[in-house]
Image (cartoon, rainbow over the protein chains, first blue to last red):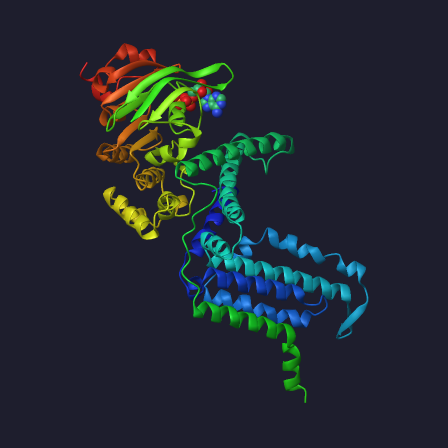
Length: 267
Length: 240
Ligand SMILES: Nc1ncnc2c1ncn2[C@@H]1O[C@H](COP(=O)(O)OP(=O)(O)O)[C@@H](O)[C@H]1O
Ligand SMILES: [Mg+2]
């Protein structure tokens, strides 16, 4: 397998992860969607210096990894490309914000460093939560849930088509890189002089294939929107799950766990 | 079932790849469409399906293929693409198979019933929950045929159904095609397969019909086939 084929394989692995059956998979997609969005909102709402408040938020994803029997390593492996990008957001904070706000032993820590770490953690947590949603919910069911929340059909269909289309494009990329390397043995990557024609070809080829795919869909009765298999009804258990999770987030947000713990020991 | 009346078609202006083509395929007939590369076989299929629009008249089950009738017509036709990778786009075989029935407003239970019935008929029960990216080329072709059968079409169009298959899978596909009772139009360079599955053959050359008649007769005509860059089916060579 070359790199691209591996990438493709990983992409389809998400479908397989999502098709497993664990208590978390069994929950209604809407319940998982709502809690994930709530989690992300709460996580992002922490003050940029509130590192000690933010850290306990990690509990939820950790718990979900356990319940859904998902390998944490596979999460980090799959996120390895986007993770650095998201984490890079706060990289310049230490240069702008040099005021010392915290002392660890004799070392002063500036506000910039604290806010950088906070931002990085926020990015990490949000990505983990999104990954867990995708790893426990089939994209079709997720789209069906969005539909039932009156999300426009155009958008859900677009979402699904994009999801599938990325696969097609990666597949073409796999074939083309292979063909390139067979004719340029020992060369690492693709020479810059070939980038233009390579990208042009990729676009044309994946457009051709997308066109065929789309025809094949239309020939089978597809007409502007997907008929997502209806999700089962939202039941009490789903509501309980969502309510408990959101309550948990709010507790973490408004009650400082570290202070509570601190209070226990310092008498 | 399918009728062409003086159909012409050009992808680019004035470069006709189908020229004044007329033929008629009756209900229940199995017709092999053969011809050299670029003879226009795939184009004929796309014209029938309304993916391309040409000059002249094409009738499917008495209805003219036009923009307004596409919905009705496509429901009657099942098209097995040459490249199954472009046909199977859902994660699993099962999801691909219920795609068309659901689009045609069938209930989920009814769609499930059809899927099980088709898979049992083709002895493919094992494929149901397999992932499309994890099955072999031969299995994928069979799965593609299964998705089309789940639509219960009146006529089946297949573009080179045995290309890129090994002899074993090729044999399975041929046996499957032989068992289908629908009207069939099959393009191929695999003349042995055509001989095995079709009673009638239409030979295309430069967008025109070069020959049309019983498979036994046309596929035995060495001079005609060689003039069209094809060879006698192996199974007929000995008998000459
Ligand atoms: N999208 C296209 N644009 C322009 N020309 C095309 C296109 N598709 C096919 N052709 C041309 O039309 C002719 C018939 O093609 P096709 O029907 O695919 O042949 P066959 O399936 O018999 O090999 C060929 O000469 C081919 O080059
Ligand atoms: Mg062709």
